[in-house]
Image 1 (cartoon, rainbow, N blue to C red):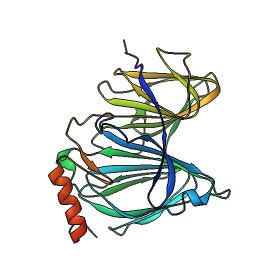
Image 2 (tube, rainbow, N blue to C red):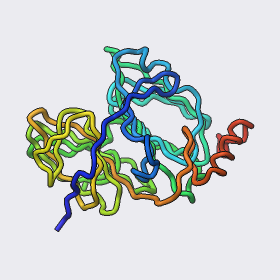
Image 3 (tube, rainbow, N blue to C red):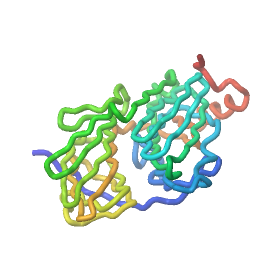
Length: 286
């Protein structure tokens, strides 16, 4: 019989300013860097004041990790050292594997009402793949499948599988589950999660409960860290609920992390920043 995951802990977001002055709520990214292994950071950005986001994230490096950007409102213009450029719009996802090193910039813009919102998740890479060739998986909103149930719940699947429907992001080493769950008032849903994988939910709107603690509603914005098990069962209060459910295979490796570069040892980290300073950081360019 499947084992339901229960709530191990909850935590609140922390206001943070990143890049050239982007105001956001940090969900994960403080404390022990292996606590949510293989995930390092989750930021929730959202504002209708352009002064809080328009300066964006000018040119900066990444190595040894992946950034996953999910836009809800507005757009993010991006370009990088490999010659890629484009725009991520509402509902789109960009899964960037930095690998051996990439230099890029991300510049957010608001929609017609100046509203800009979305999420950025950082996932670690194992030692054997930290120096892999950088790559992108850019996924437009129209090809991200959504599965609905009779209670009015919709599960939008970016990566992983739900009810025999797979998300478009594939071939990621941590075998991620990344779904955006919208539960109607007093609705419910059960989502399988691979046993042994780290799993958490970020309730970003409304109130949700998670079995076997049904009825104990957790209001937004709140991070929910789960115990181990085979599935997550969630319900909503009369307010409804929206949350990201994210899971992945732990790496179990040491983490040496400073800013946008994530390695396994301090020596590797020092070498990466030294290469960035002396112009030898990029290993793969077009």
